Image 1 (cartoon, one colour):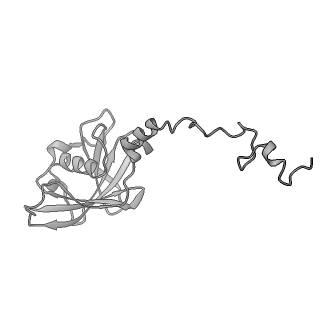
Image 2: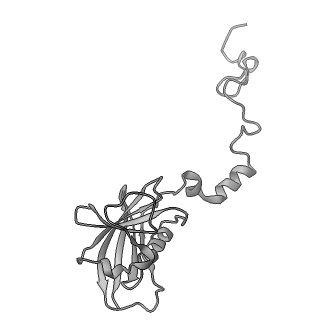
Image 3: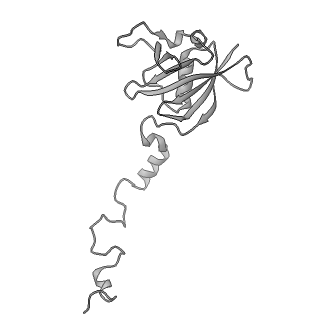
Amino acid sequence: MAILKFRIYFEEDESVYRDIVIPHTKTFLDLHGAILKSYDFDNKHQATFFRSNDHWQRGREISLEKYDKEYKAPPLIMSETMIGSEIRDPNQRFIYLYDFTKNWTFLVELINVSKEEDPRLTYPAIVRSEGIPPSQYGTKGLLGEKFADVEEKYDLHKGTEGFGEEGESDSDDFGFSDDEMSGYGGEEQ
């Protein structure tokens, strides 16, 4: 059995990528799940692959399902299409599009083919992660739930006790009131 190694680049930053190994007999649905897992994305949105050439031009579509849109040719369905059936050359490329509203785009490139399975791995497997992945839903997702708990516990989103708003007090920039400053070479009495 051939084991395919794909490098999945985040389109907006090629220094962010994941390497995934997967048997050629697995489907594009399996690859779709592995990509989402490798970038910590959920599985709640529409997705599609496009077969691509060396210039990253979109070719035949391999879709999660048939969506209500116009197709030049009917799409292949991920759950029915084995990855090996769509490999046309040793450096085969695909474009993976996830969440059609946000248009998360990943460039998928075949970088190695091995004839031997690694008995230590459960396929598909993420074998390399480089760079900080984009946050699917903004900064709260990037900082995680722990930050939200700290923010709530310490009321970080409101003015904190002991710290006033700018212009709230009659003290100068160093925390001294006008009365305290009058005897230190300021105004003469």
